Image: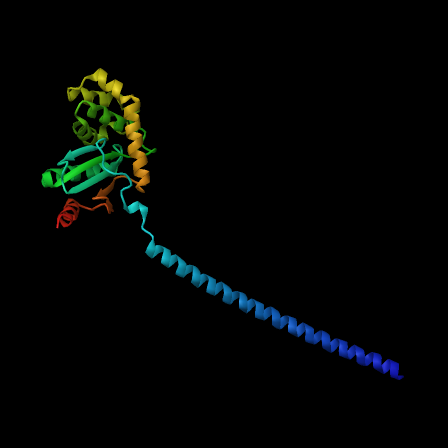
Length: 240
């Protein structure tokens, strides 16, 4: 075995050693990068949580505030100058709205001049007669009897909700109220009444309404009370 052969073998051993060292460094580098990536992700996650917490503490939920001001176009019951204003976004065919109807009516009667009640239409698409009922009430309002029609529609909700066509039923209510039936029919189908119902609905969307009934007391949304006493206490606390 000559020196050249020995040198060649030596070079090969050195080359293999260098390759092993390179592989070791590569494995070490990959482990380091993996650990670093996990650390970056963790820091990023913590930063994201912190940013979200800051946003949550600084952000005011738009659904908690009434988006449109009270106007002369609103249907108002009670004292126009009352310090307390209860705005209800409601659907005449909504069972929950029907259940709240007597509670709201009792509140209006009990608090009298202390409370003004605003009713706004928010007909839901799943209720086929809701939009027509809203127009029927507005048409009656054209003859000064919005609240009377409002009450009749809610009091008899179960009798017309499941009918194929409720138009004749609402016309019967108009007759019972002594309305001019021909004018009622014209108003029910008028552009003005349709736009009023649409305006209420869009105002509800602006206020963050996504279900009915939704109540706002002095511009701030309240959680739907579970009983009349709970509703009453909310009103009483607002007067203090």
